Each structure stands twice: as structure tokens, then as C-alpha cells.
Picture (spheres, rainbow, N blue to C red):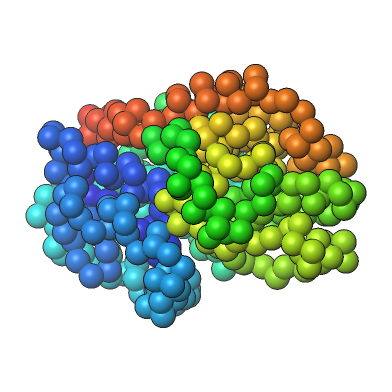
Length: 397
């Protein structure tokens, strides 16, 4: 089977979709029964396990001095700009239309919107938050998805989602027949299950100036992650409780202005709330494992990979009792109403003040159900279903 993958999610510092794309592609290139090509704006090229974009040491995961290199900043601005992104998509389309040597290939789009392609295709939809909560996204992103997603869903031979929750959303919002949908969840790498050695722990504590006890939150800093409410809840704790376990925020700045109340500003000045910025993936397992608790109370998630990563690291999790995070946690986390500041405040106190041995054990068991080889098997099964189905008709072209 010949597979073509759109590699655009790997061209800037990796977030959730980028990790998903890379890890599944890394699994696929090891399958003897598959031949993979990756499409970028530059060229269509054969993929092997040694391909630079598939390496764990990819620039997006290097220390801050390298990641903040002007070339990476330019790449991020280029692919975020609507006009240049449109040009990039056009270039990729040209690669598919004129450089293709395998007209019967199957095209996998891991990021919502199919490029023009006349053959069979599989598209991955991670969530529909832009429809449920358009105010949580930049207006241009919402317009782009609203303009292209429906056509993409109609043209795709099969549709992949990352959770049953997202499958239900597709059925509710777009009337997609359940038999067209396959669930291919993200997974957690083995390194998250390994506790940091003493040397690694000491290095992390020095590099990030970690307190002895702390709460951790990981994710792009944007409105959908609900950090404003989490910060307000934490800042409402007595100063002694804040000092006992400060809240550390790891993640790139997303979109939207960040304005803080006076209590939050005071906590930032005291250092009981602290922003770590983008953290290289090599440091994440240790940061999870050393934390007293993990906080991920998003308003809307299609999956919520950090929840599983924290569980794998043996850290108790506080998450939302809505959208996909409650499905992913499966009873192995503390769950609260993400819109209720008092409920979050109480949850934070429980993370610090209670024994969570049973929760930790259940979380590790739950996390072990999400592996990249298993997810790759589910993706490959979806590919096989797509290949066995009728070729797209002209109305899909």
C-alpha cells in the first residue's frame, strides 16, 4: 500500500497535532507492507525512519536558544499568516497533482483539511471546538475551518477521530454516518512511564528552579485551555497554600490577549504562579513525575494528551468533567466543572492535601491502554477500509 502524508504539522514547533502526526508516521514507516511519501511545500519525498522531520531530536524540541532561532520564528509567522498559508497549500496541491507517481495511493491528512486529491483519502479530525466555541479561536482560523471542513468531510473516503466524544460531535453537527468514522487515539510514549533518575531530577530542578512541591499545567496558553479560571482559582487560595505548592505553567503562548486580575498578578510577582514557556519534550516526563499534581481543566478537548502523559508519570490529575477529558480519564482522575472556580479551587486543594495512591495506580493502568503501536494498528485498519471502498466519484473532486 502506498501512503501520502501531509507533513505540514511537523514544520513548526510541535504541539498536539504535530506530535500525533510524527509519532504515527514514525510507526507507519516501519511497516514493510507500506511505502510512504511526505508532501511539503517544497517537494514530495519518500519517507524512511531516518527522515529529519521524524526524529525526536527535531529542532522544535531543542532547548530554547535553538527553538527561538529567527528561522523558526519566521516559519511560525509564515504558516500562521492566512495569505502565506494559502500559498503553501497551493504549493502542496501542485506536488500532489503533478509529481505523483502512484495515482492509486491513499492520501492521509492528519490536520482536518484535505488538499486537492482525486484518489482515496483519510482525514483526521481532532475536535470541533471551532464550531461549539468559536470565541476560543482566532477569527481567521474559524473562517478557514468553516469554509473547508464540510467539503473535506464529504470528499474523504474515511474519517478518523481521536475519541468517541469527537465521533459523537461529527454525527451531531454534520450528520456523519458512524460507519464512516474510525477512532485512532493519540498515545503516550514509553519515556513517560519511566521515573527520572536522581541526576535527571536534580538537573530539572536546577534548570527550572523547581520548588520541592508544585502543581503543573501543560498546554498552549489560549482561551480554550481555561487557564484564566484555573489561575483565578489558584490565586484565591490562602498565600500559605500557594507557597506550599506553586502552580507552574508549561506551554507556548497561543493566541488572545492575557489579562490578569490583581490576585493573579500578585501571585505572578510572588512566584507562586510561574510561566515556564515552551518545554522541550525530553524534559516533560520528569516535570510530570516530580509534580505534586497535574492540572488540565480545559473547557473543550477532543482528547487531552497531557492527561494521559501525567497519568503515565504517576502524577494525580485534576481535569474537567466535560468533553473528551472525562472519557480519557475514565474515572482515574479528579474531575470538576471547568466553569466553576470554587470547584477548581477545591480540586487544587485536594491535589495537594489528599492521598492519591489509588488514583495514581488507576491512572497508570489507564495510560498503558494508549500506545503508538496500537494506535498505528488502528490507523492502518482505517487505511485498509478506505482502500477496499469504492473510489471517489467526480462530485468529490
